[in-house]
Length: 132
Image (tube, rainbow, N blue to C red; front, top):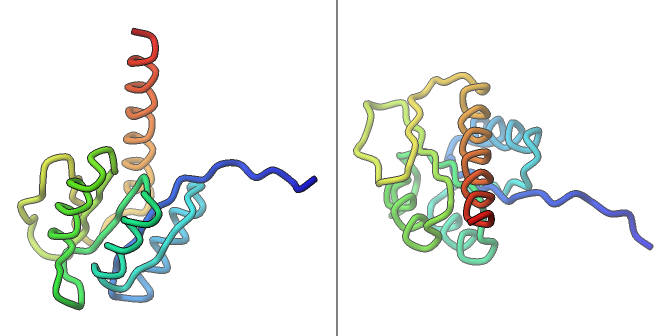
């Protein structure tokens, strides 16, 4: 018999800066996510289609043809239940409905709190629907 491993939600981190991408991935892995790291939106789009993640964290400005905002919109259309966090060092962009924005630089604990808050809200919502 193999050892059992606790279920880990999948998160996709999209950031073209490798140091920032690794920092975000490490932070989320400590928060019990299995993290898929992507350098561009096209790669992340494939991960979204194949892995059905619970969380997407993307920078606004990415290399390639698709921006992080376009990816966020597409992710919410494909998976309406996905939690999406968009980050940028530039002024607050117009983010799609259901998307959270973080301005760089931000405290890692703020990101973790947002992820946990969203996760708890989702669990309460599922429990409420089950009890009805």
